Length: 310
Image 1: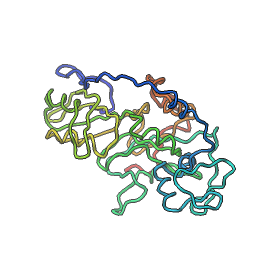
Image 2 (image 1 turned 90 degrees about the vertical axis):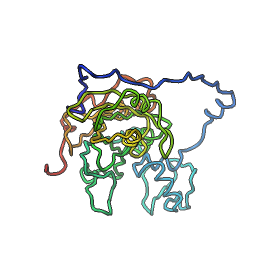
Image 3 (image 1 turned 45 degrees about the vertical axis):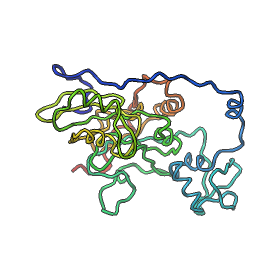
Image 4 (image 1 turned 180 degrees about the horizontal axis):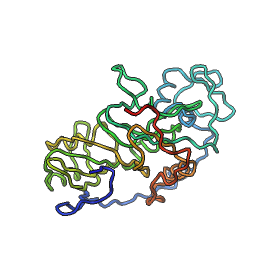
């Protein structure tokens, strides 16, 4: 079975299982709250500006500010400082150019094979995904989410720290969809438990959706959906029920899907129109629920292998 295929198995497949949703009552905001949220504040937060300039994630920029690596107009910066285009911002003596509002960030999709780590360097000398990406000018590639060493599938990279933050931060609840191969039979009550929630060592977790997709021999394939990206959460959920995941592949992150033509070890850069759509979706996800990218593939975005095939 191709784990990226959307074909549904026939015969003994089960209907997809979803957790029950509690009724939510919206709270009205007071006039004071509305006034506070609409108050005009001069300038941009420093760590956000640095992230938009492509120097790293917002969290990483906060850490560099705390470490004393950032100055504003010659003075040591602190977390929470605001800056404008008139300010001179330096990171370790390097003058940072203010990000242009009309300049789109770059976004690359990479089909990660098993056996690579999502890190710029590794003390053990293992292959890293960053070795296989195209070069950037001025900034650097930021990974939107991670996949562990033995997991394959869709990885997204961007030069925009703001975009990375919007897609990764837990409060935005961006969907992650995986194809999972499990060794052995999985009962309906077990699947229901995985959707209702399981207490893990770092808190409660659950699948938003589970659908069986058939299989051969002792292996069964499932398609699962989460709205979080905790470390190894898919594997740990199945392991909590005494099950072993023999293969795991991410096939979708938000509205970005793993293109069927994108082979393992290849990358593809989104065209400008798709980047604009992605930026709009991160600002207002509810208004773009039926979208799926990439929608356009131009010559410069054809899948490319950045290293010799094995």
